[in-house]
Image (cartoon, rainbow, N blue to C red; front, side, top):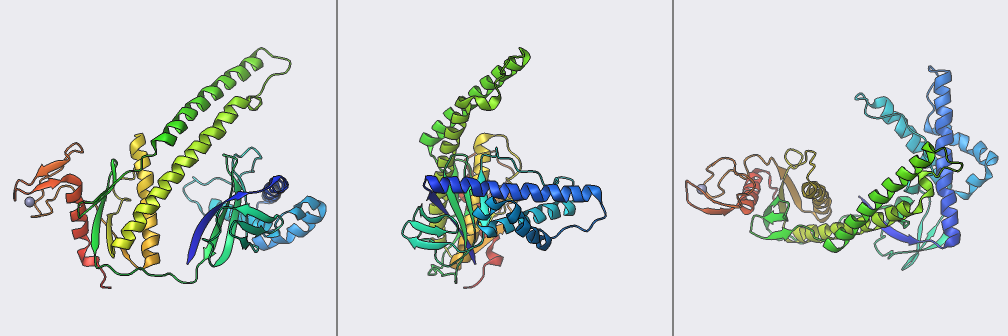
Length: 388
Ligand SMILES: [Zn+2]
């Protein structure tokens, strides 16, 4: 089983320069190979398409011609070839016309990265040994247990460096059985409502959320102003017209905005981890609605679109944690779960979202809308529960 781990890196100045070069080298190889393939294809559309093996073969003469490529982790250049072949394959395979031809990479991308598969070693509590870079300071390394298969080193728009790893874990451990089952309804104000009445609030990180909002506004305003000034220079045929990139203040706002947005996203993720781990520990069978059918249409309402993203992550976490710890996750069709009385199964029709509580006209039981739905969700799965 593969597990993803993300660490923060603290490269020193020399390593930062090396990394800039390594990101650039990957871009260089990608663009060169792509250009060559494009031309080959234009000159002779019937020519046999180059495979990864042929591209890898070209790396050797490439390195002779451009010695700076030797500063890169050599496995990363092979992976560039792999990605490029995959991008072409996706393009050829696609029948819908949505996937475009592979594009050239620009140095202006805010996120820069390279992916490698050589040997990374844990060299201490907060140190790693990375090919070509040597010892590099990182956040805590104790999560890395098992063999590292692949890694991506990146510099994000925030200016921070990260290392994302795929680790092959020896064997999943299982959690003790509790003989408990639970149905879960998801919502906007409450993230999760359980069939036993427990409710988990949605994440509320208002401090950083507000900061992110403020800097988003500053960014838009400053960028707009810079655009106006650059356009004026152009119209006046100024001797030295300023370009959009020559205005620093909107770019500064962009970095700060990205920092706060990343903070909010991280906090939300931590919260979802806390809730899902607790659920997997407490229950042997967890039943959720199959959201693919119901809630995931494009939604322009902000709170709902954030809720959608949270539900997706919530489900993904439950999926792999259940697999990981030997629990069962069942997704059921959400049809009628909020219409049927969980006590007598009478269907009293649709209830608009503002109706939070209702009384069954047939058996007279009073229901909390969400808890009733969660009970129905649990009931729907009874035929699928495995015996442990
Ligand atoms: Zn009833």
